[in-house]
Image (cartoon, rainbow, N blue to C red; front, side, top):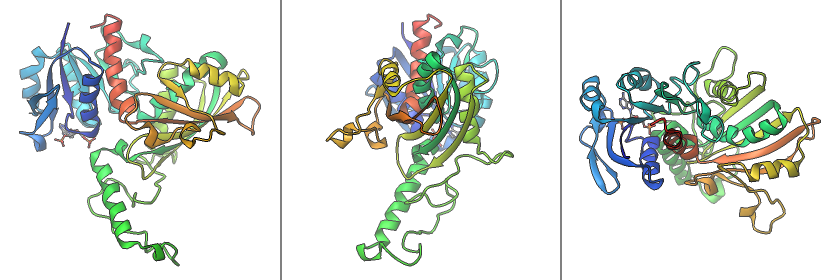
Amino acid sequence: MTFNIAVVGATGAVGQEMLRMLEVRNFPVKKIYPFASSRSKGKKILFKNQEYEVIELTKENVKKYSKDIQLALFSAGASVSKEYAPIFAEDGIFVVDNSSAWRMEPEIPLVVPEVNPHTLAKDKKIIANPNCSTIQMVVVLAPIHKVAKIKRIIVSTYQSTSGAGGKAMLELYEESKAVLSKLSEESLISKDNSNFLVEKKQPSVFPVQIGFNLIPQIDIFLQNLYTKEEMKMVNETKKILEDESIKISAQCVRVPVFRAHSESVWIETEKKVSVQQAKEILASAKGVKVLDDPFNQDASLRYPTPIEATSKQITYVGRIREDLSCENGLVMWIVSDNLLKGAALNAVEILEELLYRKII
Ligand code: A2P
């Protein structure tokens, strides 16, 4: 059995990885239908050495091709998903949507295949792919939650620019280049910030300079003074773990890294879990690799880093230790490629799960 698959947002950072994941994981694809905006009209997309012309996303074009399409992967932003996912779904197409448009709708499954694949069903045509930071956190925390029940999570993220799309990566590149071109060894230490500051080009993706800087804002601010990204982590984690009682607080920070998100995570559990037990639980957790050997001579084996995690189809966890501030607490460091497990890989794994469960 092979499938015709639409990729909506095929020219974007995540869309490109979706195509690559379908290819490298050998998903049974017959034909690709790459959709993007009118800006990409005429562009060509390469899939399995075959060229496909980008199709402009319009209602007419969806209706024209939908009879031939069985599955769709969406990563073109929430407004596109809100408008177009139902149009695909009403024609019987399973849509895995990477945006935030549908995630918190009670009837829509929000799926991390290692954690809650049972929520997939034949009549649930729209499936939400969770937020990148949430996915990598729950893949690691779910097996601990199962054994010891997590009562509280505190998380601080260090999120790469690719999470905000291809243009955001370019902004980091250009700003870093501009800073380096005006700096010299002698000017590293100066009396003010003028040597590190570059003029912000407009329009820009980030509100302030990302090159050689940190931005404690991802997405917009809400009335409760948290950002939308932070509240996504709170609400989506509860939905995926199917436990509204967990207390969660998050702080999300954009860092000048191109790919892979990192997270410092503090958890408090009902039952005591020792560091050794946690390592054992995580060593057998699907999709997770423990990289935790602080005294290793080789620093690359001591803990995971974003550069190490880039392009890897795995979520790494290291720096596992007791939280000194409470009875049953653990601290850990979680790193994963946000474009892969945080987006494209998780989406393709959802398709694999649909196949495995004979839903498609
Ligand atoms: P396009 O390249 O034609 O702008 P990224 O996350 O890297 O910024 O990519 C966003 C993806 O979503 C791109 O493929 C982009 O296509 C696509 N996209 C954005 N807006 C629309 C839209 N209104 N209709 C269709 N595709 C869109």
